[in-house]
Image (cartoon, rainbow, N blue to C red):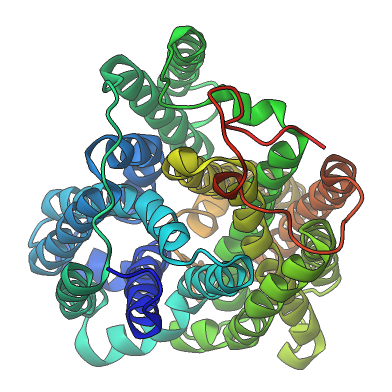
Length: 521
């Protein structure tokens, strides 16, 4: 493909944006369908947890692997393979008649997403060579990716109501087929790098990240001292330590650890991780508040996120222009600060709050997310050479995904502990057995995407549950806000003083054997 062909560039960008939207959408859209899945497939909370989290488990564990395979066998080829697997997994999920088959199909979707995601950003960099044009393209690509995360519940609720739960998977099939046709016609065939496959590194990173993500997902439900969770933590520590030691010894490692010597890269990667930490936690628990405490229907709870979606769509392209003109520091730090302000503001509203009162917090968080995602990607691409973009893209997305899983786990643990403590005190005052507090808490907080005790308890007990949940949610939101506020300060220091204009990308500088990374400035 001629890199100067504007129409084909636009088609290539559209192909990459649509497929990334689809991959990001599947992180969240299934949550709104879980109650119907549980009814039709006769599965309980544990099965529903894995329907929701099996995708992100495999996705996070294999992202680095996807980047390395793309570098070795060709990024476009691996991208197409990933898209084909994702589409096949979507069809299998829609046809699944048992919980096990559905969980397996979700994991196949995760494999496909892990293969196509790293190649997407690397191909985009190759297609758009002009710095300003590339920044705009990355802005649109990042905005569409973030849009997929935020709009999932908005479109998922009406689809489930009208067509059943399988529709949230069937929607991916025609999109995936169209993407495969467009990819064959518009995406350049990028040559593979002649390098040895780091099979040991692939195995250690996938197993180590898999154990870590599994432990984080299961920890809140099983308890952090459960033998299985402790075993996962120990296995993850050993495997990831072995992975780091191995990569330090290899001439051509799967993960270039020199990335982390560059303070700008560290600041950008920290930004992506922490924004996902705070915002994924908020987006996971806010529907519980709307459905479990305020009594909203799933469709209404999904539509409530539209202002956040609109703010992301507005801010993502704007952040690309700001980065081109002022560098990444301004939009990244401003975005993180807005996310912190939105989370903190949301914690000011209780179970009697009306939607217009806290609408501003959703808009603020959407602006923050939209401002942050694009310059993080641009900053990383400007600091690495072309041959490292697949691996760098995989690193960005791995940290974002792990940040989201960790945010749900840590903030969820804070919420659950405060909820149980509050219910214990309330049950004691009401003359009820305090051991029932734990069961009431488990009935409200879970990964089922909106399990609620509403209507199943006497009035005073229901009021106590609602109050305790809101109190726990406020604690989680304030802790997330504080963590993001600290992150904003750290990132401002790491990114340094903004310079007017974007720095040239590494592949446009004179490059030698020893200058594959831009020196930290």
